[in-house]
Figure (cartoon, rainbow, N blue to C red):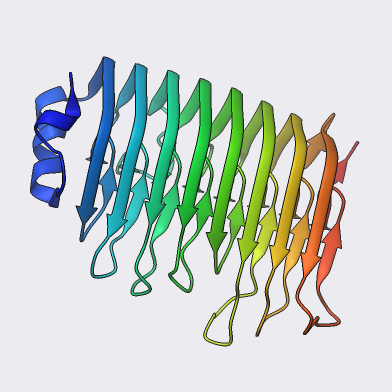
Length: 287
């Protein structure tokens, strides 16, 4: 399937749903490239909203540009919203290659933007993700190089992530913008991450930022390797929690490695910023 011929410049949510209805609940063996999308709602390079239990297998997605209008919702380079349950890890993504994704939001609303998935509960395995560029201008939207919001019991494993540039105002991370529930993040190699978080006084929460994950409130993080990460916090309001691996962890962290990690904090530095080589805050275990 060549996506660009039919959906070249502007896509409203009705067109995204037609893509979904054509494929049904099993999406397999597809190539999607060279699409420019403008959406007032959820948006994805392949599917806007994947309803129910959905499996995506063997997909190549590249050269996708997405812009939101009038606030937007959940935006992903591949899928905007994945599944209609917060706990359905029967949603599966495997054997995918994602390259050259650019996402930019307006300042209105709270858009959750991910290089692959906007939000969802899923199992993602054997993925190659590179050249992700996301500018999330919304005050409280989450941003992640792979997924913005990973819901309960998510699994991300056996994945390579390279060349990620993210700019956000709230929770932001190289791989997982924010992880809820007993998730598992395992065997992930991350290279060349550049994150800028520009919080201001209109934010309602203090940002959590990590080279891999901003926040994980349970579960396991194992064999996640980060090589060359730079995080800049240009603050003008709330304090920030920053970690070379994870901003705020309630998870079990095991056998992870962080090399060449740099943090830059703005001149108006607040005394209560929390910055750690592995975790800004750890309420779990690290070994």
